[in-house]
Image (cartoon, rainbow, N blue to C red; front, top):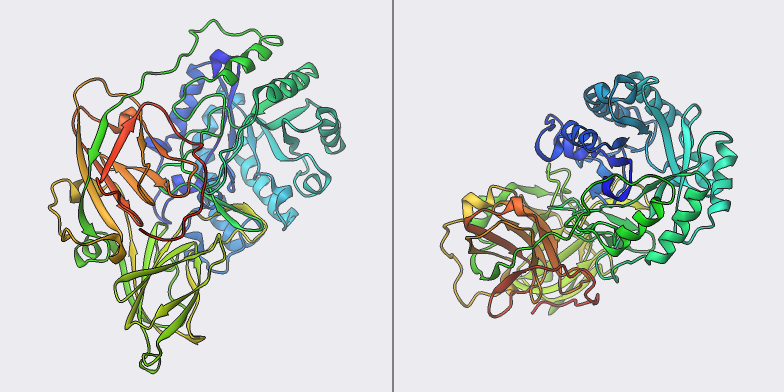
Length: 569
């Protein structure tokens, strides 16, 4: 970034990363924000901090920790709800007391701290809430860094987004009229520098949609115009990266649309940090206005081609062995409202709801199962797959040959990070009925998949008969591969598989869904690999190719044609 002429780096700070559970705080490893700030300073980059508490960013729940919905089920996020503010202020206190020594006024690189995030796009328009956040941040920052807001450059957003005493900025992309957008900023911030605090050189992408791209000439034209006005510009994103594990969110307007695992964003630097033609064109424009540091020209890093791996199935997810290993939450309840993920104390990824068909209905040839899944559900009748329910496609019912028992496996595809609904996005199975009669008895199992899978599966022998298929339930498959040379970034090509998650040496690479697209490959950073024997694990929900092979390759595939497939094979 510095080699391209950028002089600052902007970063969101994700509350859920630092407080994944109510009594758990994490400030090391991937959550070491202070080390990030120090590295930026070493690279001669200033830092712009965006701590939320809401961040959007196509991240799960917009950065909120899921447990807020467990602690206070009727909570109103992003408002003056005192129960929400209690937790939000504690988070900001914990963060900013650590950041304080690195503020610009204290000799550090942090020059700006954002309050909330595009609040003008949120329906609540709660001034009391905004002011309390400002007071909490101001208590730590004082006049040692500039407090600012970011909002869309239209009147409704600028009516509710700005905060008295906080510098108001706007955001817009390559299709915008630069003069008109900065005139909108001047209506709320008459003096001071012009700032586009989110200029979009790429865009976000969803499953089942084409991969979004932004053409380079459009970027350079608008960038040149902004810089000629003396404006400050923050690229969103200059480097996007990856939503590893279950950290990708979802948007909702007309339909629920889950975000890809990759956050490549068609940015100037790829998911692997490689420069693109876009990178060099942006550098050329910046060089007209600022001196470019004399640093080595970045090049595309060598990638590892580690060949194919033949996987073997070791567990059926519904078997007792799987439940004992990964079924961390198991309850039996008499209720027509089975517990949500949040009520189970489970953030992600799968919850299994099991029930029996009432005796009064078993004389029927067929029954109609009705349910609203959040977000996607596989339905099994007497142990055999028989249909899919989908929030995205508004499929809320299926006709079954009358069974004795029903299994419904619900997948959280990502809590909403942005949209036209309340942000409180509970996950689970809602409004369940059979032939319009409420279902009163449930056996509920919440599954947790994490780094412990490596030790539990590495030497496991198969418990699945060769004739078993995914018609009887998802499978957990494992395979080993050797690396004898250099450890390099690589990509796992999931083509010909169905839908699931992948682990390498205990690291969750995230969701894959090649049956739908457009993303085929999962990014595997070199630090996730090791010399010698490596372990690959798939939790596959829908389809296993006949040869059970999967391969590592040197190039990403993020724009495979998106398609809709609604049946298992």
